[in-house]
Image (cartoon, rainbow, N blue to C red; front, side, top):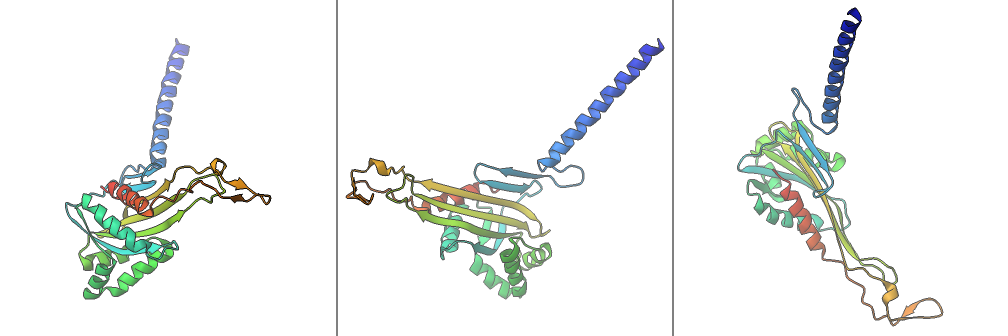
Length: 249
């Protein structure tokens, strides 16, 4: 009888231990996926698909109408007017989300001078250019002066079109990659971030399908095949803007 009772006790302890371990493993998996419990705010992070990267603080609940101050938009490409063109595309696309009323770079600069916070504005620009992030204290002070619940910053990291060479098998393509971040004007914390890349490809090009003749120096002459041009880069930019705006809550 004593032996049976001991076995029962051991069995109960084993079940209890397994339950505790399973709960701990589940909690660890939740933390690994970005789900914070207890007193911490839950966050959600996703990679893959479009946008190619998405982060959103689950506590981020934008109002019906939000004044958004765009403080910086860096251009890491060699295309000088990439920011101007993309912002026009983004502004048009934002009509689908009327709750975000974005002040462009020029408007923010004028408002900063009017509200006597030019130094804060320049500080935010330097922070973004140096580290691609903004300091919470500066964000709070600047947002309060401009009465802007949200502060936005962005970067264009890729903007190029390339045509395949006539003697190379492949395709022509246009690539655009852009990232945007939103900061809370109240707390200065990052509340939303998205990055997207779109590559548009032409029809495949095969130099072997050409009707030209190869001479003694292995150079093709008189080719009748047309090398496909790169798709319009404007179309790639529009797709990126739509993917980013669609991801906004």
